Image (tube, rainbow, N blue to C red; front, side):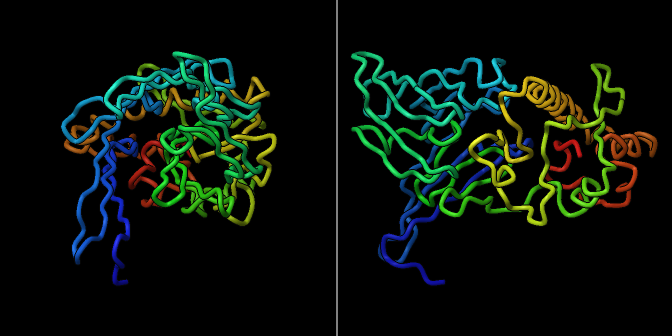
Length: 303
């Protein structure tokens, strides 16, 4: 498609965990794409803690506390962002966040004077139906405490992008059709690693819902009033403490597997037993021949 004058293009760079670490925006001017801005992102786990400009100077940083699970990452940070310090205008301003019961940002308050600088209202699936104040666009964390990309109207949940206009993910669940079949056959578990990288099995919590519908694109089983999906992998009700503990446990094991992934090249230079072990703790036995599961983000997802 031939671009029109002033069209926008956005490119991204991701790290080996699948986290977005750079975003560059272009505008189509006089027959060419001209770079408008570049943002770099720094994380603590999956929590965004800083934005940097192209020169590497910090323009925003973010402070997190307990999320809806009353733990640091039991609900993937939903409802856990305390404040942001914004230096994009030249002087630093501190903004504090207020939430509704599902961890959606309802108001942003100026930390200096206490004035409300942004307020939002959403429909159940996250479409913004009201945005008031002097800071509603500049603030990037909104529905489900996720980063909103205004250029194309999508939320970045980590593993997937979400469209509040359609109430659906824009790419299918990483579990894919193979995993969906296992879930429907009630033959589903995942492999965990202990601190010594030894493999053990653990059954999934009944409170955690992977997408068991025919569609791999639906959001929180079409139940956004009660459920959240912290990273685009599975949904649960944050009021369920057992579900939050399971999710926290799964996230901890993701981090352990990611540490193991750093040694993957070394493993591949070893004997076949190591390679077989690497596949074993990423794949259920029923899917040992499904090599697409070990590609891309499949290495971080415990299905």
